[in-house]
Length: 355
Image 1 (tube, rainbow, N blue to C red):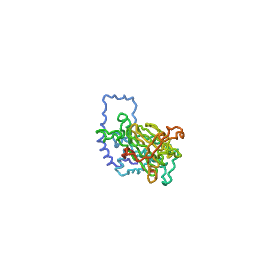
Image 2: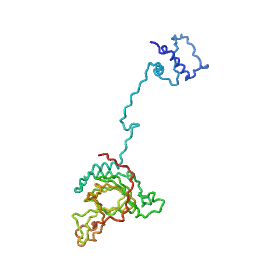
Image 3: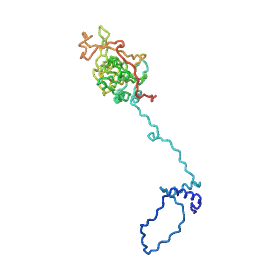
Image 4: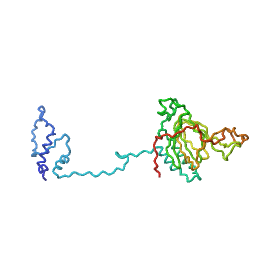
């Protein structure tokens, strides 16, 4: 078998000359190093040396790698092509696009979309959803924070009774308007024939008058702040006053709710379908209405005044168990003192992924 350097002496010479430029200085003999005395033994015969190329590199690669450049230059070895990279199926691998995390607002939309069917006609309003479905939506709404919908908790601003969401740039730097003049802002999130999602932002002492939700199921979650809630349900069968167009209703709740607190639910015939809000401190309320108001479907928001039971209860005191738990309700035109405006929702948008 012929030696590689005997077959290609020219290439070997080039390799040797190129390697000399990077060689280390040769070691010089140390004159102080003592030689071992010859013990009289005859040194073993040495094999005849043959001059070969030496690869003098700082890092000496293995033998096959040392000969690789020479073989490549001689054309005896062809470089191996790397196989094409296979597409990566792991979404967590480096360089793979990250999956967008679903927001709580999107999760709320998805759950409502699966729970509330679209009304078939105005004559047949949808039945209330199953209790298990309502509990699932309530549990999800309990986890939603102001940051999840693009709001900040301003309930402690302005000395504990501030304007919260309404403490914006158009108010700063100027004389503050009276609290009663601060508008209620509604932030529209989503609406379809089956349900709607929105947020009411109330400044301190703002009032949403007593109103109803005909044929509707409503879930409300206070995101921050506190409010006084007063709600009624109609007495069935209907009881009318003799001398005025007022109907009897039973008090369902008369409480102050402060965040964090559980989500409240009202139904078409129970749970306080008629209610009013008065903000004790700047607050925000996340509402889900199923189905939403629709004039062509007969779901029109009606405002009311409430009167103590004693106002029109002549001769009826014995018909109720506790007069303080009842009130007379009178429908009125839209109140002129309510100050409400639309606002810009800045939280996560929802996508229809179930159609």
